Length: 473
Ligand code: NAD
Image (cartoon, rainbow, N blue to C red; front, side):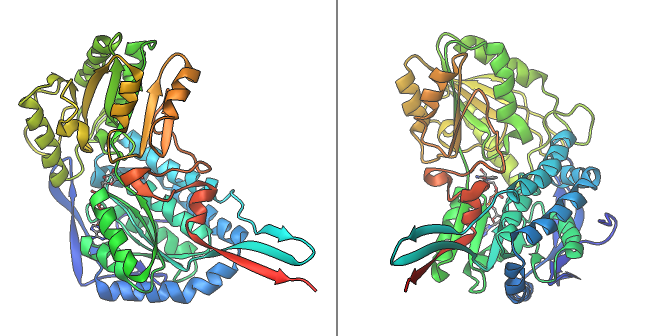
């Protein structure tokens, strides 16, 4: 069990470890520091990598079923403490308590789902001359680096994928949201053999040390496109494998046959969940001209009715932006919108006072070359653009270096599915947005990433294919 009153510690070689430096953690609802935790440097990283390497062979040899048993114990331990973990998550990250509970609950479920996937040796050739098999071997030590928007989910998913496939891990959360990850490290210390799991809080420079470290075989990174490019460049020095889950600029295309009010509710939630700080949030809406005005009005009504506040308060729909840097960035988008040419249908008034709060914004026709359309806002600001020709809508949706996901909304699912298949993305949804499952690959096309998480494809990203070729007779 986690002792939520104990000081935070790193987890290295199965031991609680302090560090000479510390991180201040800010509650975004107040803008004030509310906790401190140790910050690892290169000495702690070297110790963690050595411990992971020392544990790698025995962990590999345990086999999938035994490793799945360890992950099941972790999932059980997390589900026994959903409420205190969710409350801590709200304090460090800001999201409403209901969304925090979902995040904690989903983490265990997704991990367990992955451990039901079988990875088997394949026979490629078996003829008179040769028997050739394809084996899947763990890589060794996987470094997991996570962002601040969903620190539990984005740690537990990649971490358990690496562990299940036989790797040991060194994990670093974002310096903005290290606390829940360190608490989960406390649980894992009591469950996993020493050295298999190492959890280090630290700043961006610790991430850079990990990507260059010769003792780490793969980096599983979730974060921004800009940092993802640095990770890949640094990993090239030791030819580390990388999985990059990066930013998105997801388009939703709304066809002429929808009920605009009903669809607006779903679009609004998918655009503003976690205050829009979701890689696969809807970030642009293209609506057919026949439903455009009704949809804009319904979205604006949703925005005006959404209650903004501390995530721990009853009835909060949108919590604060997670950190000051991102808050200033989102305010910058809103300031740009005030200069036109778009029309702000909601959110022209913004809160002042403590905390990083933003009222949701709906803006009509800001222009295809505006920043709000071309960049990832990662905040509750929704641009809505009109189209009359579906080919034009698809072209505009695809006119971006991002390619994480997208969606098409229609009463005619077959028509929508044919359009969805033309989106240049990792996932194209019909009449939904943000649905993921342990058995379904998730990841980005174009600059939204490389490789996939979840599913057999994602698990194999933590393994090396190895051919064993036997000459008969
Ligand atoms: P970020 O790139 O700033 O930071 C992510 C992590 O990388 C942090 O732990 C940070 O300390 C570390 N880091 C920073 N510099 C580094 C370096 N040079 N080398 C190695 N590590 C380094 O991202 P963020 O601002 O924390 O997160 C928001 C971004 O993450 C958004 O763009 C969002 O879309 C993206 N994201 C993507 C997914 C996905 O699954 N595709 C999921 C969630 C978030």
